[in-house]
Amino acid sequence: MKMQYAIIGDVHSSKEDLSDVLSHIKERAPGAVLIGTGDLFECTISKRFVNERTFASLEEVMLIPKGFVELLTFPSVKGNQEERILFITETDDPLLGLLSAMPERIELGEAEVIHGHQWKWGGEPWSLLEAEVSKNLTFYGHSHRSRLLRNGTEEEVILFDHPYEVKDGQTLVNVGAVVSDKEWVLYDNMQDTVTFMKAK
Image 1 (tube, rainbow, N blue to C red):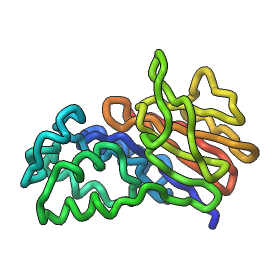
Image 2: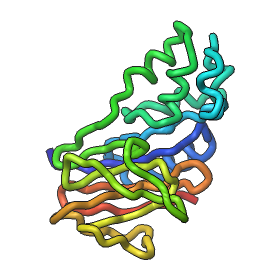
Image 3: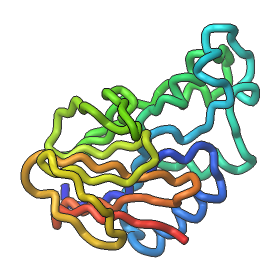
């Protein structure tokens, strides 16, 4: 199906930044379908302490600003923050059920969305070393850094508001982070382009 997708991720419970990005999407691509790359929420328990105890309420383990959940009207894959929240929390809170139902991958026709923490990361500076993908075009997040890798060649500088063609070969697109950076990506599968966007 031919359409546009607004792909956002790494919100980390930042209601203000998410509001700004959603407004920017409404302005620039009002008909686009929203999709999340995960880490919508911020887990307040360090991964170093996940095996020490379980918690009985979500408020103990994550940031939930008033009115934030109401902004999450779009489907999203599960990020490492959501996985950690699920691992350390035992509650019948409906929100936990929503987190549990988030898939690991979402297919967008010939493309797919994944958070990316499942892949191999490392080095200095810390970056993606190896990705396991099943589609020619894959959108991800995790590192909070907008990135475009086409057929093994990375764009040295990401230009915003500039459509990049992604028609042929293997392409990895890091959509950047909503938190702090207010970045997102517009994917047009009619034109076979991705455009990196940044709200003010």
